Length: 174
Image 1 (cartoon, rainbow, N blue to C red):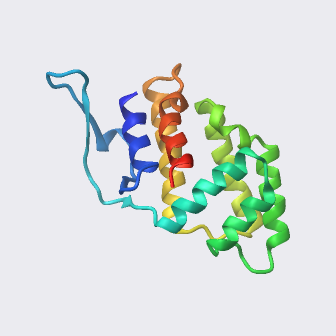
Image 2 (cartoon, rainbow, N blue to C red; image 1 turned 45 degrees about the horizontal axis):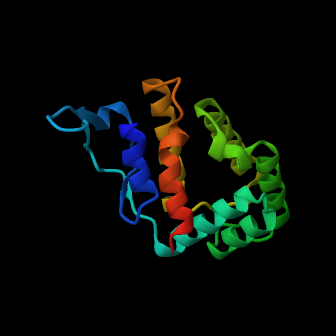
């Protein structure tokens, strides 16, 4: 819970996020008080989302939930993340991701998120239709690593339960 809450605040917040979440970079500090704290070390890989990318991610989550390929394509276009002349391949890859369960990611467990991550990587590679901005790539990679870490720490728990309040705030706040 402490890991997902800390990362939820970072990846869905307005500030920078630690983009290298592995056990060697995170330590639980058990001090007197109501709950342990998380200590982050090695900020060699950190990122902060630009206001434009935050807005496009917000719209993208809404498009994902609505299974709206056109909205997703439009957002990627505004980010200049589509390879010119490969729009049909991008549309097909997004439709395949939605058919593969991407729109249900908010209710997914760790194993499903890992499968969706693998599907996304495969579709990106095979379609050759996307130019993923570095900050978006690190954001998605960080979330995938947090899910994987959570799966090792608490395999029977639901990380989305802890991330959801942060995600809802992210989607609904201006």
